[in-house]
Length: 312
Image (cartoon, rainbow, N blue to C red; front, side, top):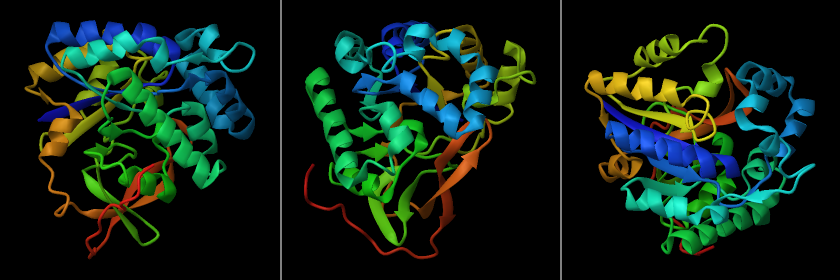
């Protein structure tokens, strides 16, 4: 069975502290992963507005003990305390990932802005967020980014259209079950989508899954031997307070014969002309506040499409 670990890095603390811990842990157990880094400012404190709009977010914060998990500095970043840069604060960490044969991709620019205001920043705002994210990636890594993962699993037809112009190897923007090509409102997009297939730890942890053994069993029961299993973890969760639980899980998966792959290796096996075309739908997800973008029904027949030729 193939397992792709997708590591989302959302905050200054996550890249500076969580990622080095994950690098050491993954190296010790001899497995690889794909890291997606938010390239702009850490405005985590502004996410507190979600409490006012969505009571489910407050429940999630209590259930996951967010303040103790992230720390007060991150919780207040961009509000009572200045926003700190993420990628540009730790370029050596990102380069160390690549030098250690981990894959590094783009996780947007301003994570909170994208997740909370995607539908309100307009076409120009979406284009600007993507442009700035890839420019920052090039400044740090010295090369063009080849993959993208949408903050908060939230995307739109505008975002998919702009990302198609870059000529990426793949995206990982949605939740789903198998690689596909995205369609929204009759428009079919060219870039292959490799969705997250498993729930994240912050979505499931709570009284029912309070101990390490229960969490490991939960994931082992949901791994598919026949399909590509894409498990998203967070540098701020598995890379910090839950590092021992994460190591226990990957060791258990190795014992079951799991083969760990980078997402780019999974993408290299895909023929985009043969991938199913599926509608991208917005839906709530247990354990997560608000909507996410998910793999919807497959189109019975899909005309071929090509990526637009204009750049960013």
